[in-house]
Structure formats: C-alpha cells, structure tokens
Amino acid sequence: MLSALDPQHTVAPAGYSRWLIPPAALSVHLCIGQAYATSVYKNSLIAHFDTSQTAIGVIFSIAIVMLGLSAAVGGTWVEANGPRKAMFVSACFWTAGFLVGALGIATRQLWLLYLGYGFLGGIGLGIGYISPVSTLIKWFPDRPGLATGLAIMGFGGGAMVASPLSRQLLSLYDPTYDPGNAGSVASSGALVGLFLTLGIGYFVIMMFGVVNVRVPAPGWRPAGFDPATVTAKPMVTTAQVSAANAIRTRSFWLLWIVLFCNVTAGIGILEQAAPMIQDFFRDNGASAVTAAAAGGFVGLLSLFNMAGRFVWSSTSDIIGRKPIYVLYLGLGMVLYTLLALVGHTATALFVLIACVILSFYGGGFATIPAYLRDLFGTYQVGAIHGRLLTAWSAAGVAGPLIVNGVLDAQGEPGTLTAASYRPALFTMVGVLALGFLTNLLVRPIPERFHEPRAAAAPTPEPDTATAAVATEGGSNR
Amino acid sequence: MSDRSGKQTARLWVSWLLVAALLGYGVVQTAITAAKLFAG
Image (cartoon, rainbow over all chains, first blue to last red):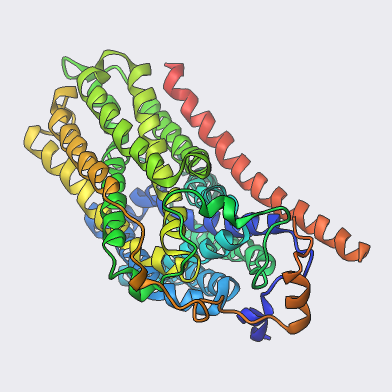
C-alpha cells in the first residue's frame, strides 16, 4: 500500500490541473506553521512542569534546530523520493511529535516534550517545509515566485491559525482558563487535549496534500509557455547544478549570507515586537500602548509577514530576484533608520514602518527558492533550498542575541525607551548593508559546476503512456 | 473523460475551500486582535 507514495506513482496523468498543487503545499505549510504559535501555551507549560522560561523555550529551540538540520540533511532524500512520500513522512513526524509531547505532559516528563515536539516534530518541520518547493517550481516554470510564495505564505499563515485555535481549544478543555488574562494557565488535561487534537487534526489536513500532490511528467510544460521567455532574463540559467556542487559555488554562500542578513534583521523586530511598541511610547515610566494593543500589533505583523510572502515573491517574477532583494535589503536599511530616528513620533508611523519591514522579512523567505531555481536550475533545487535553510537556524540564534544583548546593556525591561533600541536598530542597518552588498556580488554559476545534460534529467520515471501524452503538451492548465 | 474532469473540478473546489477556510479563520481572528491596537 505504501508503494502509492513512491515517486513513479506520483507522476501526474495528462490533464491534471497544476492548480491542485498549491493547496496541497499549503495544507502542509499551514499545519507546520504552528511552530510559531507555541507562545500561546508557554506559560501553561511552565506552570505545569514548575520550571523556568528557558527550560520550556528549549522545546522551540530544538524544533528550529532540527528544522534546519533535517532540511539540510534530508533535502537530497526528498528530491529522490518525491513530494508525496516526503509530505507523508513529514505528517508522521509532526503528528508523532504532538502525541509524544502529550504523553510527556500527561506523565510530567519534560524530556518527552523535548523528544516529541522538539526532536520528532522538528524533523517533520524540516521535511515538510522543503517537500513541495521543487515540485511547485516544476509545475510553475512561468511563475515560480508566485508558486513558492503561495506555499511559504502558508507557513506564516499557520501561526495565525494555530494561535487563536489553541486559545479556543484550551478554553474548551478547561473552562477556568482565560486566554485574555496573561496570568491564567490551562490545566494539564487541557494541554494534553490540545496536543492530541492538534496532532490528529494536522495529520488529517496534511493528508490532503499527500493525496493531491503530483509531479509533472518529464518534458511537461504549461500550455502556451515558452521557456525562452524566462531564460532570456538575466541571471536565469537553463543549466542544472546538483546539491553537492551547489555548496561548492560562491553564489550559494553569498545567498546564504543574504538570507541570514534578511532573517536576522526581521527576527530582531519579530521577537521583541510586543515590548518594543510599548517601550517606544513610554513616558515617565508608563507606556501609552496597552498590553492588549501590543498584542494587536503582533497580530498585524503576522498579517504583513504572511502577505509579504505572496506579494513580494510574485512581484519577483516580474522584476527579477536580484532587484527584489535590492528592495528588501536597501529599502529595509532606510526603514530601520527611520524607525530608529522618527519611529517614536507617532504610533501609526511606527506600525506602518514595522509592517513594511516584516513584509520584506516574509518576502525574503518566499523568494529564495525561485532565486535558487534561477541560478541552479530545477534538478535538485529542493535539496539546495534545504541546505540554504541552515541560514535560518543561524539567524534564529543571531537575531535575538543581538537585540537582547544590546537591550540588556540599556537597562531593565519596563524601563526602556525608544532611545534604548537605537543601537540595536542601527546594528540591524549594518546587517542589512552587508546583505545588500552580498546580493550585488551574486553571479551566474560557472559552467564547470553544471551537470551533463543527460544526468540532469528529472528523477521520477513515468509509465510510458503517461509520458507520451505529457510530452505532447498535455492539457494541464 | 468528463467523469474524470468532474472529479478533478470537485477536488479543486474541496482543496481550495479547505485552504481558504483555514486562512480565512486565521486572518479574521488576527484582524480582531489587531483592531485592539487602534481601539485604545
């Protein structure tokens, strides 16, 4: 039965609509995006295990480190085994993470949460994140930015779904829990119920992706699509580069730095968002922004983070990848400077600047697979993307370290003002400047790294009849 | 052939509706929270 997951059974028949692939990808990314909603039940876990913030924060850290590692190590496996098997494996690990985590909560064994949600769930995150990327790029050779933007938008949207859903489920399982009260904690039974519900629910939703995802038959192209129109653009190659060769190229590591800088700067705001807006409008010790309003600001940032992934990545199909990163990083420097200098003058101005910055943060994530496709071809772009995501893990450590390190030197939480943030914000301008210059140095991949034409043929082999129909152009829309 | 086409159309509707329902729920809930920023 599991042979249905094999790549040779995943090749699309003639007439299969490519518009089934984005919702398949979204059904995975919307589920794994829950990883950014763990703060909802963090206080309840701290109370349940009677432990520190750090001990609970480690669960999330393990998950993000495992995301980077499994994407980097498992990328080649995903390319070889196809998106359906990868999505299935991701769903199994992600769900197992919740189930083992629930067992840990029920038995008060914190190490089971580390093993479950952190280790197993983190593997599900990494494999799930990269599983649909190369497939989408193959289905949408005419609009790769739009396709990957749609999928990766789901990762941003996943937190927006999981945050309110988790609060409502905890209230349902524990009527004494008040999500509007920051000091309220849910019972252990409610936490176990939440983990079981999310684990089982996410498995069902991810199966939609497993059932619907297909790879196009070799040689398939959308009706009316002329590859020459894409390859005529600067920085777009017709050659193919393997993942093993990609990491030997200068451009791969330049892109690694570009992604690292973009994510580091964005995480700086994202991680500190709620206290930051309160501190920026603090006068004589009291802030003009309430805790509820600060929560609203975080919600608004999530919306712009998600929308930026789709809007900016789609725009990159029109203006090109390098120019869009010039925008993200160049305009980003201007916006960070404005935030530092005039952000404290009006709440609306502060919110506007921060929202545009977060849209660039999301855009940077969503555009990188299409940038990789342009430079390295489609041959092993998923595996190359997986290796590049280690920049995300590194930025996840560096961004908060920079901001928290600077703020610690400025004073105690609750006493900080807009001026306290200036050194951190100007540091981020420097980080963005590094990314800006690095992006300008990205060049096409030298020919010595290209695969021989025959070796770079797509991995899955369709049955003869399907291939024959597909290569005649098919009727896929 | 038309049966297959009909099944595919149904599959397209179900898939996009599922995604739209999830995203719609998230966007509405977040917008309600975000409104608090300007309510005060």
